[in-house]
Length: 367
Image (cartoon, rainbow, N blue to C red; front, side):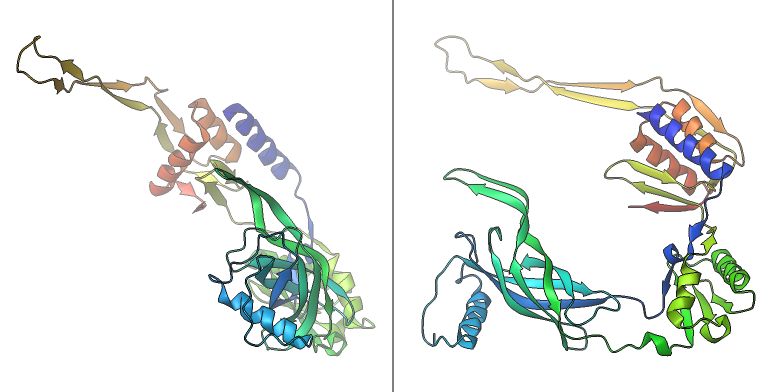
């Protein structure tokens, strides 16, 4: 496994250093105004097979069920409901940019009561509102839950998350976002990973594409595009030309480790100063072997248990001390750690120690 990781990282480092891959601007930035809007709603799912909310524990489910029935002309004032085939849910969705009235979007439903499963349920018509309080879509449809559950008298098995699901194309857009893209005279390009070098390269690439100074870098995360100077028929035509321009982004040297899974990801530009690393294992074994002492036959003595503990301290020979020379690159770091025969989790501890010693010249991120 360690040798595979070493070969993998070494191959990545060699490929990255040999050929720099340019990226489209559309994959590096977000265009001002071209973004989605979050929607949320509170609805009711019906048709569950006895896996819905217990109305004693979730009284809000009864309230919304009464409201739905009264809107349909059914008078249920003073009635007592105790069904187990309904569940209250929160409905979420994202209204994509330039969504038009009548279009359909995907939605996600999540139980908020004590329902066991949403399998087989149907969402009743639910309005979805945005941050401004206005209704932009209405959701309804059959739920596709992401799990399964089975319950018996003495055991219960749950796979996945049956209390959440999706409805593909489950909401219809009823209101459009008031935004006129054609009237924009300037558009800001917001970098997903702000960097002065990348922003400067984007500015230069756009100006070369249009043959004039139509773009200017405002800061590490923003490039301003002057639509009027592009001489494009519309802002949309200018964006089409801009988003397909290839730019080589500049990335910061980072080392990202995930302690839960033992995953290590290191960038090509990671460098380490001259440092020595020693790795060994210390094993402590404690064994309990109590002794039972019985009294003589027909005596008045009592049975006594005497504790006996064996402690063994074993220190493996390890691999001694390995020296990493200054200015070491990614492939050399992995090769040196691989020479020590360490596991990925031990490699994380070694990298953390190198970073604490001030020899790791990269951003060290632990998750």
